[in-house]
Image (tube, rainbow, N blue to C red; front, side, top):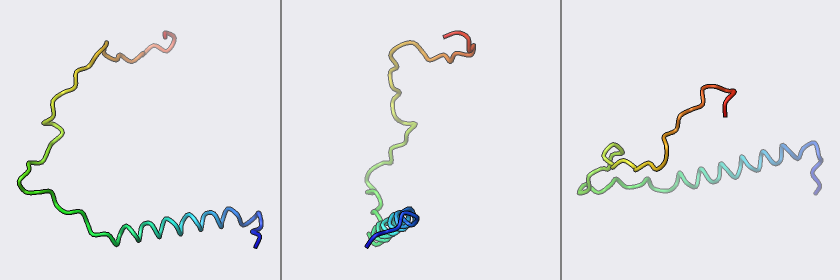
Length: 67
């Protein structure tokens, strides 16, 4: 079976769409993830310690003729 050159892009698009639909439907059959354990506190991003920066601070070049 030969696919004509005019139809190759449509066949490729249909194949990718079909594979994506199969993967999405397969994932939807899985049970949802369980809730975190109630004994642990949630970790918030603001509670984390700051990172030490090494080197000079970044200063953007506002004059385009200088490098």
